[in-house]
Image (cartoon, rainbow, N blue to C red; front, side, top):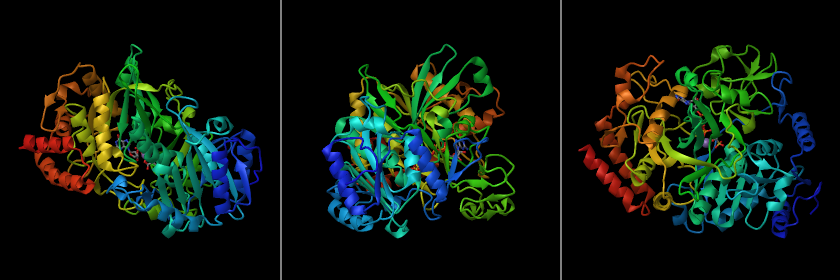
Length: 597
Ligand code: GTP
Ligand code: SPV
Ligand code: MN
């Protein structure tokens, strides 16, 4: 095996594996990613030459690039994502499963000579701070420069990782191959620390450190090793006295994690000196600290955020993070000044532009009922931005110990059933609340949009083993945490009968965070209802808004009939999850049904 540059480890286990993958895929060259600026600059140059990347306006967007994926390759593909444990039972009924040896054999045929004429890049990377107790290491082999450049932003990648690689590292093999959608596979072998991804070039399918490693493989490792990997943002809320309290929140894909993690407090709170710090916007690894609390780190190093809807008002922090060194995927290309645009950025769509498919685009043809074909940017178009470029990035971002979590918040898109906020009675009931989460589907995954489906803990597509066992692990963790966070549920997406959101959302979500934290400090009373503790209206501060008391009352009301209807659907879902649903959760479900009357 011949490397083009100096290899970053002598570990035989690592080198043997690279050799084996190179023999299979047969690249022309193998290059170690040191992530030195000179190397990255050369890769950017090459990618621009082949039009894999477009260099954007140097003055307005320095160091920024645009990339377009194949039109049939714009989101995660859950139907082609597999958990390949030795037994089907260990993957569970919610996951797709292929027997590992059969899967390896099937995919070997697709990888065979897939890198002929291409370079294989070897990316050593860490999820978490190098050398910290939380950190885990991986190597991704890929034939895509786009993947290399994204991984360098999204993870801690490069030469410094070499010395941490040993036989525990996560082996990731990615090849674009022919991008054949019918032979697209995102496969996880948790028992072998292995991820194989083939025939895709879209983020969540190919940036193997993210969903594949930091959630699917990590959730499996977390269960084995006594910690948790969750689809959660982490934020710090600083009070005028300087004290910062941290919360972690799990919302399904494209349901508001990035926005909440970076929120700007409403004027009323800002003036008093409140501030929000972003520790993470998508993934949290949680461990029990020596002090008996639950501590969280964000294992990532950047944001792979939804572009549409991001603007100066909704999320100025995210927007600022995309102003330099960012990669935009499937957004609209403004040819006038060589910048980018997306729906919801502003009210001035470019008049000389290419849409996300790279076709000449006339903004006047936009039809919100047919976004895929008429929008400038794809609804799941994304920006990849360096976390440190975000103005509100937490000073604790690099703290190897993470931050202590006061509250865990679940949430989803529910037009009717869920109130603005409620608190669970205790950890077991909170686990139940997470297990029955439901949300309308979004453009983040291929398939129908706006269909309500159960998405427990926002982890339905990301648990690397049986869902029932995952819930049991939650219950087990609760028993082991001496001072556990309180568990809440929120819904920013309640609609009136015309389908308009009735809660303003975004910055105003701070008002709900304030109630949540006051509950954690035993400073607010609450109304006990069948589903949990709900705020008294007087305890949600509406100062500076035009929300009427009636609207707030509606937001906090519990529609008993729709909850009763939901019970049947929950039972069906538990039956689908199957034998391993913990008895404690079935008991909670029975108790809820009784309380609803
Ligand atoms: P992933 O990166 O896919 O995991 O998504 P995410 O959970 O980080 O979602 P994100 O914050 O990017 O939000 C996705 C969409 O939800 C955007 O179109 C936002 O405009 C919208 N959104 C976010 N917060 C709110 C809110 O409070 N209210 C309303 N109505 N919409 C919101
Ligand atoms: C999600 O879909 O939840 C994302 C984007 O965060 S992706 O990395 O594509 O999975
Ligand atoms: Mn996500």
